[in-house]
Image (cartoon, rainbow, N blue to C red; front, side, top):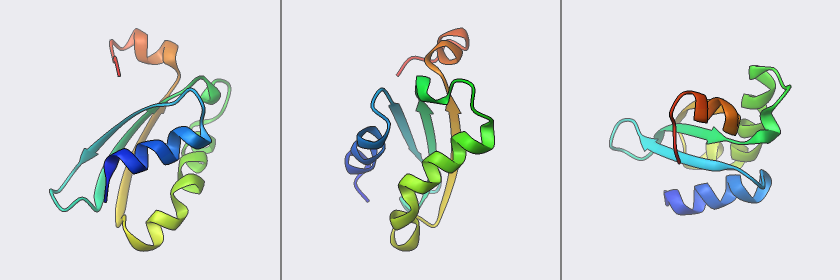
Length: 84
C-alpha cells in the first residue's frame, strides 16, 4: 500500500486534514492513523472514527487488515504539541 495515496484519499474527503500514517507491524496492512482536522470539532469520537472508516471502507476490504485511528482538531493537536 502506498501511504501517499492513502493520505491523498483522506485529504480528498476531508479538505483541511493533516495525516500521519504509521506501519504498526512492518507488513503495511496494520496501520496507525493520526488525522487532524477542524471538521472533527463538535463531533463525538465515534463519529470522527466513523468518518475515517467510511473513507477507508474499500481499502479495508482488500489492502488494510487493521487500523488504529486517532483523530483531533488542529487546536487539540497544537495543545498536545503535535505538528504535522
